[in-house]
Image (tube, rainbow, N blue to C red; front, side):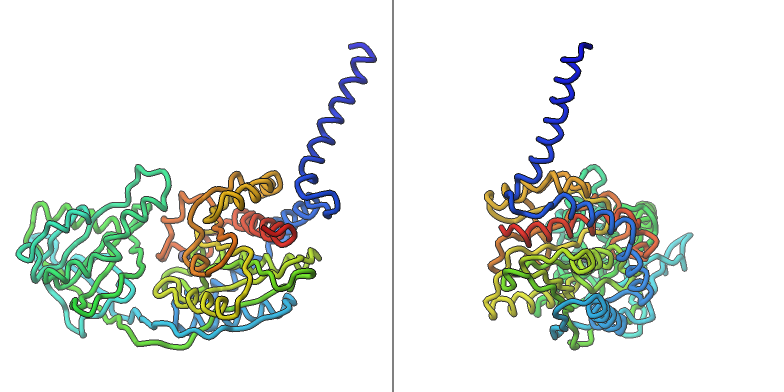
Length: 468
Ligand SMILES: [Zn+2]
């Protein structure tokens, strides 16, 4: 290569590198601070220090956090203390009345009439809102429903006096697990109510999970309308659902005995935990980050929604520790009672509306703490385009896309928000653990969780500086 050619190539290379750097900085105007360096600091701090992952260990040690439980109150106090210790400008507990449902200590199901399988126990767990069996053994024959939609054609004659066994599987052929969940979860939400309308005495529902083990995955049933008699509803592990289904083919007359002492105990006082880092230039403009702080009473509630809540707590912590000084106020809201009432979200939305608060954005993390993929946005094309300009920076924390989609159950209740955003990590393993004893601290990967923290913090920071 000649000397001139070499110099020319070097110049070309420099131009490409400088051009690339300018491309990132130019997105935000000349007078802005160097976002690239701030983003690198956020990622390095998240991955190296693992602060949130350490907090998750503490939170999981408290135990699961069903609304109204003693552990949920202990967790609320723990979060309040963390926010105070990290030096937030404001920390407060927002009172919320929540329903209190308790599982009780008696939870038993077995086959009580069969040629070869009498006394065989079944792996079950009561579903949220279920009533118990009044200390008795509820004994009945069983009718299987393989596809919830088909139940619409069943008659009272088919169902009366029986236990309805809803056995629609989680559709493994659908790549997106949230879609598969949305389809199969109908039987859990509505099965017992529809069965009761036709005179059934209880409902057994196949666990809505992608994992073929025998752990029951719980969740709430919809509220029974006043006109429909309440009956018990339980989830059954996938292996036992398969066993029962096969047994019913050869022995359609088997009977099952159910004994449960779960109950609904009215309402009790609980709290949303709220903390802020005040904006340096536009303190009245808010960016909310958060998730739901309650969980089911199974496992540790680690992925749902412990680790995601902690990701948003750490966003505030990093603003302070890294000296990022957001222009707009960043407010973390840990909503209570998403799982069986959404009372926390409704209370917060009411408060925000009554106080005419300006929400520039509300970002929810409630899809587990897996490898970051993208952000969903429920809003206008202009906002979407604005945010997509930031992808070169968000790419550094493994965010590949921002697109239209649902934000989250809690932030979607807030009115007058410019951008309602949902953090979307990889979803392939979420429903292996969701609402079950599988959802423990050990199921969370530190790197994946901390990359999610970085992604949420970067987006929050960019919105705080640039607005929307
Ligand atoms: Zn959740």
